[in-house]
Length: 390
Image 1 (spheres, rainbow, N blue to C red):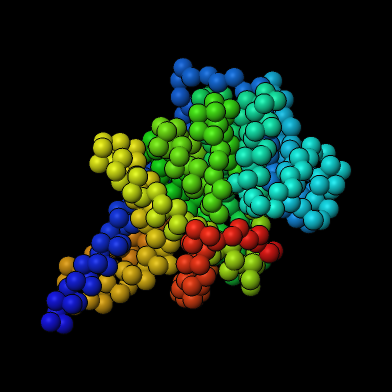
Image 2: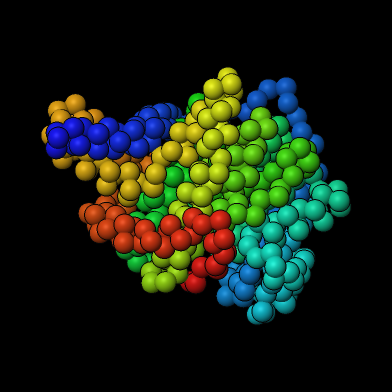
């Protein structure tokens, strides 16, 4: 009887982790292939007017740095740009500081609609009516490199529906947690994006450093209000047949909380929101795959891939089961995770400090597991958007 119970438990563990293992294998080995920067031929999109949108909720401490960073970018030829700060339900000096820094400010006051998704919908509606050809979104706690606009606009003008820049951590040296966060970003935001790009897939939207053309926003209106609005909207794009391309040469770096309540709140919001989005969207995605829409297969596998801390934990439990095949599978899956993380550091431009931080990965996994109740709370349909304290 115990043998059959263990067999059933092992089968469940394999079923839970197998889609994620397949996804990791595909994007890891595609992502380590040499990078290519070939623009599509024969497709030219006229981008003459671009808005750089900075959504900000009580970001007085960071907004000037962000605006100045964007203002210092080298401007592309024949392009009119405008930096637009959305002061969203602010109770501090964000709006005034942004104006003094040289940005146009859109003030939004609507306490019934809290969150970045509402702020972006508000801004996009105004800017598209003013004739902007494309929009870029930069978080208020971020800085960009001087070539950011050049690289992004080059992709837009080559016909991209949407773009996603290389998004990394601004302050990896602030704490061990931010260093590990940077390692995670190199895997999630760089290696996985490269892998999807190499496979000809839409690379995803990571919430910071992404852009959309007017035609894309008209075809798929931005009306996502979940606590992971970027993921939710990207799934809508893929289902509509649109594709986001990876702009590897454009960097955006966001400041992460060094620890404490801010780190746990941010992580719970991201992973809880991702879980809720998966539950809501997986049935439709899988139905589309069955109907022959193969472009939905990889997004389905992505939704089935759990955060690595949980994925590794379940693989570890599988490795303890008394079945040879299950152990071989689990050890392969664990080795694949290790390759994935180290490959992320290599292609993400990491150094010995990032590899050294991996020694503390077990404690990071333990912290993530302890935060599971808060993550599940954030996965509820009624979970509120909560600003991350820095």
